[in-house]
Structure formats: C-alpha cells, structure tokens
Image (cartoon, rainbow, N blue to C red; front, side, top):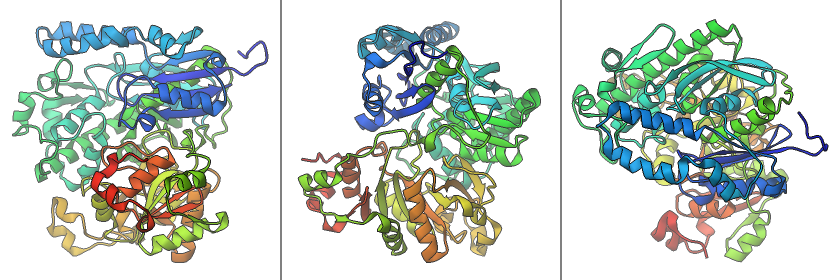
Length: 611
C-alpha cells in the first residue's frame, strides 16, 4: 500500500525501557538510519526513551516529526504488564520487594507508552504495537537476502514468549510456535552470567569468552537439575533454583548450594571453577540451539534460516548451527538484541501492516553493512584547530598504506570513520585495529587500551576473498556473528599447552595470528568487502601487500564500561585516555605523543570534559 499522494512514507521504529533503547527510520521500506541511545547519552545500555536517537534519524533524513507517517513500538506494553502481574500472583507472597520496586515505574511510564510517545515526539498519527518476538522476527527476515526462510528468535523474554519460530515469505512473516516465560534460554544463560560475577544483559559475551578456558564438568549437573531438554530442543527450567521471576537476583540459595558457593563478586578473582561453569552452560546452550535448529528445519522444510534475539549474539552457537545444522544458509540480524526491535517494528509496519512488496535476490541483504548511524563531525580540521589537536593530513590515496605501515610497527590505531555501526559490534568504522600476528597484542589491548579482563578474546577482520585461507568459513560474515575454526595449516600446536589449565593458557601461541585465535583454535570472524567497507578494506589490503597476511585485529572503539564512541570528540577523548598510538578520523591522523594536555587526560581519565 503506497501513499496515495505519491509521497514517501516514513516509519519511525522505537525500542525502549528494558535495555539498549534505539530508534530506526524507514522510508518506503528502505532503512535510512538506526542508532542506540547509549551512543549519544554515553550511558552504556541506556534504556531511556531514545530521544537523541530519534533526533538523529530525523536529521539524517532531513525531515521533521510532522513528516513521519507511523511510529512503531517494538512490543505490546499491556501484554508485558499482564505477564508481570500474573507472575507476581503466581509466586505471591514471594517477590513483594521486587513488585513494589517495579510498580511505580510501570505505572508512571511503561504501561502508557502511547501517551508517552505522543508527548515525547509531539506525534498525533497512528502508533503500531507489534509483539516483541514479531519485531525480532521482522528484523531478521525482512533485511535478509532470502525471498523465503525459516525464522528463529531466542532471547530472555518479550511479553510472554522466550523462543519463537516460524517462517517468512515475500513480505509476510508468521510465527507458529513458541516457548513461554519463565522457561527461557536467554534467562538461563543470564543466570550463569550473574553467578559468575558478570552483569546481566551486558556480560553474557564475557561468559561466552570465558568458556574455552574451562571444562564442561557441570554440563550433566545442569541438565539433571536445572533444565529438562527434549529432543526437539524445547525445554523446561526447574524454577526451584531461580529467583528471576519475582526476585532482585537471578539465582537463589538452592542454586548456590548446587554449585558449592555464592555468586562471584564482580571484581573478585576468576577461578577454574568459574571457567568450568562458563564452559558447561555454553555447551548446554549450544546443544539446545542445535536441537531447535534441526526441529525448525524439520517443521519448515526450508533451506534458509534467519536468527534474531539476544541469544543470536552467541556467535559460537551460531557457528555450530552453520557447520553442523541442517540449513544451507543463515542470516543473523547484527543488532539482534532489543535495539534491533526498533528496526524490526518499522519494517513489519511497512511490509506486513501496510502490505508493501519486498524484493530479495538470495545474495544481497538490506542492512547496508549495518552502517546506519551518524558520521563524525563534517569539519574535522576545523574541530581539531579549535581544540588545539595536533594532526597530519594524509592524502586519501595514501591512507591505507600509511596505516598498514604503522600496524606493522605494532602501533595501535583508533578508527573513527563514516557512519557508525548499528548493533553491538564495531565493524571498521568505530574500531581499534592492530597486528593479529603479534603474540603480546591481546594482553596489551586488554590491559592498556580497553582496561578490561585479560582473558577477553579479540576478533579478526579479514579480506573477504581470503577468509578461507585462514578460517574454516565458506560463507561471508560481515557482521562478526559467526565463530569458525582457524585453518589447520595456520595452527601451532605446542606441547606445553597440555600442562596448563585456565588462565595459564592465555599467552601460548596457537596460530600464525595468535592475537585473534582463541584457546579452542577458533575466531569470531568479520569478512571485509571493498564494496561495503572500503576504507577498512584498503587498510587490510595494504597490510596484506606488505606482510602477506590479510588479517587484522578489530575490536570496538571504547573502554570497559563505556559505549562505543560516536563523535570525533568521543573518539579523541577515548584515544587520549588509553595507550593507543594513533587515531584516524577521516584522513586526519593524530599521534598521541604529539597531543597537548596528555598529563591532564592521564590524570582525569575517560571522564575528562573537553573544553
């Protein structure tokens, strides 16, 4: 259904009030802009109404709120409130403290989303409310390259659903089966995130990164006591061990007794026990993901699979579905968490609600590399001159070569280029890059640049056409959402590895690209194409020409506890408060040792306010 006046139709998608709020703007079915609110407010996982992200989307399209035809909110607030009330009633009188804490927030803002949207945006047209998992499913299928595909969404919980599957064809999606709260793979994984001392809804990827250091010695205990897994991947949690339905914590005393101790405190030492627990729940999660994938294939008889929801960010599980599962092709939404719900809600409105057709060629997706956020300030030179930053203006045709030479010299480079990535992964526009061949680079980056746990792995960016030379990955992976084994001829097997457990294995060289090779000889791969990612491609290409290695470290441009940088000022501030060597914004190159006020930045840290 087009606009009868022949004008473009604008749809604004919004997700908010749980974590990672975001906004997305769609024009006539094309994704024009999308961004998380945290990138503007600098509050990590900001869940507030995405006012800044909305303003960015309008600015990117050069329109006003009056030009918006529909607003789509990513879930149904009253249905979610129903689940909250029924859960508290089912568990009463347990959870009274949690109930009293939640109610004022719900009664003030979360139920009356329609009124809040109208007030915040000054918007008086139609507001659409798809269900949470419909938004996830739409975000997975509609931007995918597939004319037809199975759809699987896995997360903590939406309104009631925690796992859903169905299919998409043309401009329609249909979810046919679901598992409901409190039986949730996402919440199970988050319970172990909490127990091992990481923050729920943000530390799950740390648990995944910790898993290869451990042994799956608790996997059978988990399956015996905590979860009953059926052959089709459906499951039932034993709620006697969990506190999340009505409590202020994820696990309870019975859970703690089962694993012989209280949860790890956030800054406490990580022991072999925590590593073994991480490995165990990761193995159980992968088992469930694979079983569900086989069941979905059996039910849909389709060759393509689209994935979304927070659990779809478990790239180890995704890699196993690709290698061991029944589907020929899979596509994963880069912003699989709640932020991507804004995108899904907008596209669902365009295709399904307004019944507009969709074109797909089985090759190209509609995500635009996920480079959907704002560019840095346009006048970098003017900003640098105003602030007194010292820079070198590098000719465009020499940028790739210059950065490649610096990386060969083991310099660490910050990139702030072009439009910011939408989703949790930096893909070369807001990235820190370095030499993957350097054995000490993982520890340098973790401890001196990112200020985070030493065990955390880094991802490789590799030239798309040479990915198979280094990784057992026969498909493109532009969004860094698939883990693949390193090729056998690139592995290094040291006998001394057999004598070490846990963190003792960190500094052992396992491949010719040790800084991006995890303990199990795997890597979370980003394939880089010239078409979608030209500058990053040119840098890797120049490095390959100089070293015969088409692989660089690519990690997000931020430090622990901070969102990924958005603006040039964010980038410069973060750069100066770390031990990065160079910063490239556009074609302006900043060397840290030549910058003014170094002592001030070192003293005040990342919270430094620029004059």
